[in-house]
Image (cartoon, rainbow, N blue to C red; front, side):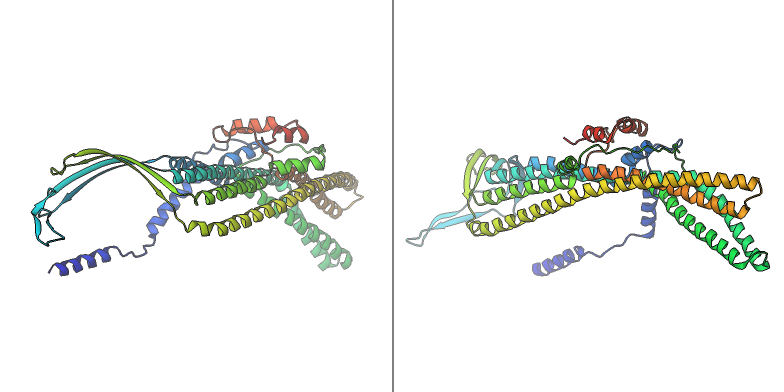
Length: 499
């Protein structure tokens, strides 16, 4: 009967331990979606006016979710480091227990020589016993391994900080690029739309001239082709520029579709000069780039792992000390202190050491190869960023000359239209050319700014000297503006050099 009850109990226990996948319900998904929709922009400063370049950088640094993710991972790594420090402490375990039975625990003795019972059946234990003890245990080998692991976790905290720096550099570069293209879109979008309406009307009028044969067909078709070609180019530029504002909003963590205005700065002919030699920039990049530092920390972790492998070969020494109590009335001393030491050694670890050394050596070579490959890539990136900056400067100056020349041509045509010496069709065509020249002029300036930001990204210097976590958007923007404005590239880089 007892066996049957045991089988029934085991069957019920196993059925209770079986698990069936339970998908989220539609209501749960709806509730989560509603919460996330609020949380993504919760506790953000509202947009109260036109956003400047420095405010857009400040908003991106403060609210961008990619940055928050890296910040959370850095906090997690610091928490893991704090936890690993507790592994260095000895174990202090308090235990209490109860042991009961329905009958006394009794026994007798038998002589091994005569085979006769030498002691009547007796007991030395109560049926109900309460025990408690407080034991301090310390493993010297575990302490050494925990010390190495804590040092490795400290390096992982530094790796997380470098990952955050890398994300910050990327965000600032993306913001500067998107901001200037969005400025071009805001500056010219209304005029582009108005001109496209006029162009569409002019194309229709030209088609009617062609149909009614009021002019030579080839002349009308050539005019239409020129207008359609310019219109197509203008629409492509307008499409790219309109996406820039959406990208900028995403970088600042504004809700998609939220309307905001940008500060429209005056056009300038001035461009920043690069007054640092390429050799100096190479050394700065190799010193400050987060990717290089990350590999260096990984190499330190690998070297410490080699020390841990050797430490695991040593015998383990366990030391214990405890305070004990029992309620068993048959025990002479119900309270006592216990202490002892134990040495243990897994001899098979000796055979494991050569393979472990080869694995760590191979990993070290991989990290070294990665560092050297990354070194060459970073040096190349520095020269590429400089070349891009120089090309973008030349293209900007060419675009400025083209824009100014087209402006003079348009002024001449307008005077001709006023004097009835130039047709309206020619004026519309040149106004479209003027709009394309103006858009390309602004785009070339944004390319200069983007190339300028890529130099900072290539060097790996921190783009801000302030506390992102506590400062408000306004104070962040002021600090960034004061730090950048009026400084040469040389001053900016060396004032932001990572120590």
